[in-house]
Image (cartoon, rainbow, N blue to C red; front, side, top):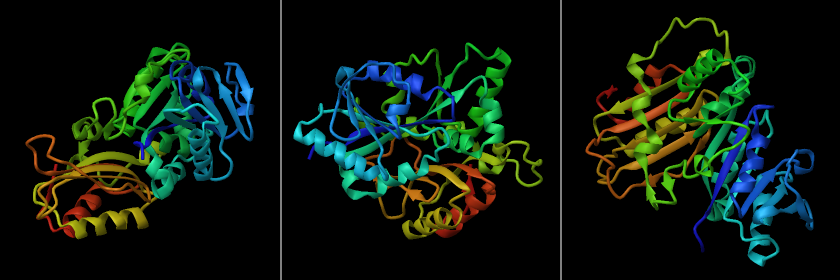
Length: 343
């Protein structure tokens, strides 16, 4: 079977410019399948060349637009089968555009836990558009907007030409605190280099390699021991309850103890665990292991051929809501048998 096709999840709050970005990507990324909830109601400004059987349309540049009918899995399966039969162009990537108030986690769950889908598609990254003019207010008022930012691999800042410079600067600082690892790209009138949304995950298809340092970026997170614990001010905004922090553990970890700790967080604190990434040193295993999770969704672990650098410590980064970083660090150390957690 061919290598799984990359999937980009494009999310962002209502009015943040997703469709404008999508219009540009359709023109600059040929042979792309676009999945939307209702493409007939969205202002795609390119011409639909031909209606097709079912909820599908052929677009210029060899792109295909398809509506998501019910669950995502059947839609991806139908799209794949049509591609295999030659009924539609042999698209090379998929972009899924969510609604403005959608929680991206169920889509991630679908991609990772449907074995048929996972054999043919791989999540390349989550891209979130943020409105420079109204983004601060949306983050204040809507928990969904905060979650969309927290789970992103790349943030696209739109409408900067309409917002005061001070507002843009404050929003940039806020986004960096919410999600330190997500690089921020300024988008003007929807124009975007397609490279900005590609190869955002652990696997880089262009270099055909696993790029842990680029993906993990632990240096951007505040150590758990340095996080302000307890006595937090009342939440004037949704993200006042969110913390991004790192945990570093010197001693090799017990595999089953670590699995128990992470499963406990994912099962009982899923609403609090927005995202985590890690490269870990497991006891009696010479190769490092990469771990990743979003709320209750734990990604399949990835075994690396070698350590990316000379640092053999286990390194975790977390984005949490209403969850004490010291509690997380202690849970990991206690269950995995490490003597202590340091940052």
